Length: 269
Image (cartoon, rainbow, N blue to C red; front, side, top):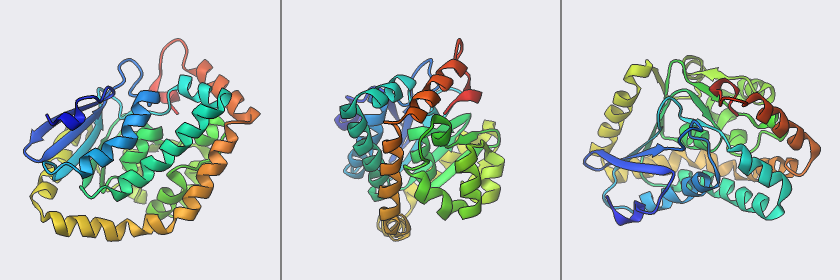
């Protein structure tokens, strides 16, 4: 393992095949929720990968039965109470989107169980997104009491159209992997038992392709996201403004109540 990945705590790395780097989001006991450590690591890992000459393709997945269950509620609480934390996470959220978009290496996501929050940013911005049939993709912003900003404002309308984007983002409805494929939100839907092997199969094909051709194809296609930059920046500002208001505090209290005493993926945000 390259030394560049040695100090990561919440992201685990392995090489299933030569030139294929696999990232596993791992927050034990919390269904891989993005706490402060994981959130920061998800921001910077794409720069490390972009600079790594050993990597031709990347897979991102979650440990166990979940992809990622959303923002850690302790971090969300701190954001509602501390302006320094709020502004730090706001900058990280912005950098996370742009770092993934600008990473030259092709990315494959393998989503199962709940796929929410910062993990979902990588899941949907992946060049090839693969979901298990029973995955539950949720943008939980409005349930928390803040605007559905972040990546959602640029990714969902481009992938599945404005009508579907408004329906799922405003109502905070869960999208199964099967439905996500039908509406164009993800590239592929497979049975859960086949998910990891399919992700590896796709990554293998990408790793054997022309690095230059894939890099510049990705760059050109991701200009659709870059052109939506003003929309993204505005939506992100509106989202983070919401964390200073009463709706976010009420939403946080409601979610904490739902998650007791056991951490239920059906209540993940």
